[in-house]
Length: 253
Ligand SMILES: NC(=O)c1ccc[n+]([C@@H]2O[C@H](COP(=O)([O-])OP(=O)(O)OC[C@H]3O[C@@H](n4cnc5c(N)ncnc54)[C@H](OP(=O)(O)O)[C@@H]3O)[C@@H](O)[C@H]2O)c1
Image (cartoon, rainbow, N blue to C red):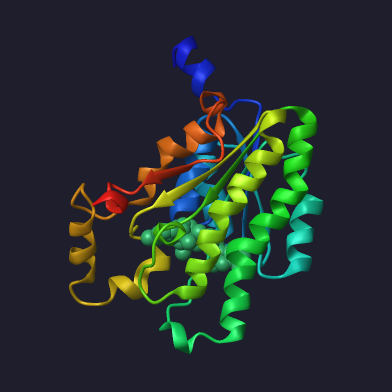
């Protein structure tokens, strides 16, 4: 890498915590951030998947560890805060989506969805954000959805959480940008991952969604690598409070 590119994009010397880093978009962002030089800590529930992801990262020369935690549970979120150590780059990627018609969503569905998709990013931000600000440098990358800006596909509680995360990003950016902490939201299109398997199983749905992207295809986890490196590093120093649409043009089609 040239010195010029290193200055803009190298993440050497940084430590990143990536929730949802054992699968899909989260894994792809963890790998990209790790291969750009950062040490990576993955957080998710299933230990076996975490171990496999850590192994894959190590094969790429990335220094990686993992914390098994259910981010829908406050005690587990606290455990992450207590054990992760100093974090320079926080990626809030872990998400769940309970797909039901609006009227069928229960209060439990709602609370479980908000807990993982909005409360956990808020609590992790409250823990790591001020520490980043005190050190004078930090990055928070929150993961939104098309539902951050528009309704989509029988998942109203998820939509409320994902709209909330765009607001959370702006509030965090307002609080900490003055101290060198840039906070942004990545907005995916429809991405082929385990999360979207129920939608992928509906005949014709994958093709129909592909056609809604200007790029005429659905997203893949590796589409998020470049955006993750950009938003995690010095190149993004004057970019904060924003939504970055990594969606093949879905939102403007
Ligand atoms: N795929 C899409 O089309 C799409 C579109 C818009 C936005 N997004 C967003 O992108 C993010 C990643 O989604 P993905 O599609 O990459 O999904 P994925 O491949 O299913 O990965 C989800 C990750 O989150 C973890 N996770 C889920 N619930 C958790 C919990 N309660 N506590 C801790 N970790 C948890 C999962 O691990 P465990 O199950 O082991 O916990 C896994 O690592 C999510 O925020 C999602 O809302 C995805």
